[in-house]
Image 1: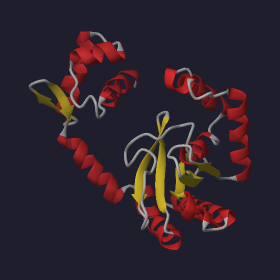
Image 2: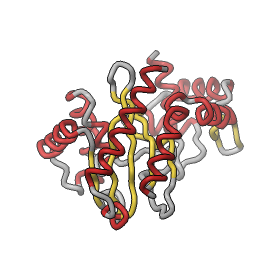
Image 3: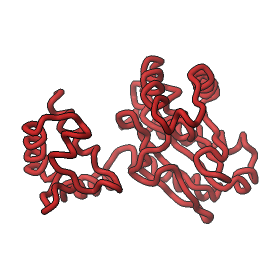
Length: 246
């Protein structure tokens, strides 16, 4: 299992500024030996997850096939589309479904309202863990030791250190989110935009991700805050019930 995890970690090296990787990049950024790097590239290529190019390796066609499979048949997406569409129709705000993956929260479904704007990291991209309602409402329902590990790992980065994150205040804020059952964020991730998010759980009440309504501050304030909070928490609870019944 450890070897499989190490091999799959190679896929995390791909990003917009690094669309092609090679053995040298794997060794430098993951600390693997050249022999391991060559073996993982070969096995991922044989599985169709990577394709060989003159300058190295890029993501392969099987990634696209899996993305299509997930879009059409993923249980969370299939059971959430009508709920998301209803939220957009009733508010004109953007609505999103995001899932917890590794140590990241990733948007998997985004529906735009009539006045769309930036929505987290976009579909398939990780969202800031500390400055968005979408992520914080997920962190609030993790185990305390998980939260502390994630905080220590991310708060020690140069970017986070410049943001003045402090463990006591952060953990206290998560307790408040858990108590009220939702999280509101105003102009944190994107200036002039406000979001409210509620958690989604699996059949064992483990947090899976979140459902979010987000839009321009002016549009958000056109509604009673309690009304929007009730909308998103009710929809998230309905999705949780549907997941438990599948």
